[in-house]
Length: 170
Image (cartoon, rainbow, N blue to C red; front, side, top):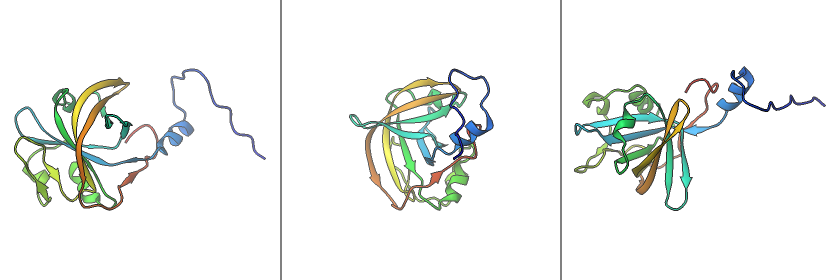
């Protein structure tokens, strides 16, 4: 019987490779956040660190790198859509993998638009419409809290699952 290495206690300044690899095994989904920016244009962000964080009211948290300009737009009360990407939608992930905006990003996508609301990407598994409720500091990321105000199943299917190689990058 082999002995397991002891769990280290206390803060460490360096993450060892085995710890980084182990943390990378924490699964997440892939999501597209859509909102209307301050200039009235559609804006989007690909997210992977999303989790339900409350039953009542229903809430989610989304980890966003601290230097992302999107944080200044998602002030309390701002409406955004959280699209759950379904398994096999690699092409859609590619469209939103880099921070880009403009009509080319939406080319060939099945959309629903309503006045004064973020665009809905109809080919995703499901969409949750959320109201930004605040931001919490989480190291080099910020946790956007969103209260779920509505939602619906769209194309259905199983959500895409994302497992990272390690905890040092997405």
